[in-house]
Image (cartoon, rainbow, N blue to C red):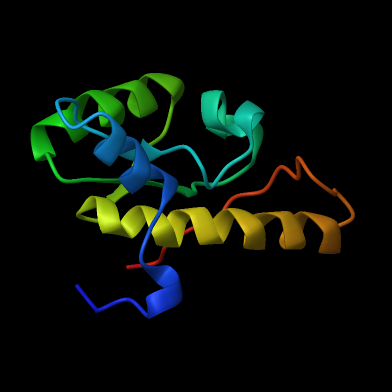
Length: 114
């Protein structure tokens, strides 16, 4: 995992994990609008949803929930430190939505081509 710059040292996911140390935090859902999270087919084509967390076993129920919503491309970004990147992407998502004339709540997807 690349070392993050000083301004990139924390995320809400990490803050939640520190506040609740006996729980296991998994970050997901932040890169899509709420309506798209529960209905990914509302946008044509396949797009990617991300998960991150320290405990692989804890990520399985999150992935199962995503699959129950219809997600077929789920990318595990690794440890919870990756949540910072997902939270940063949420800002880019808004900018893309505005550029598409959709504003906040823009319904579009991002596909990671492997």
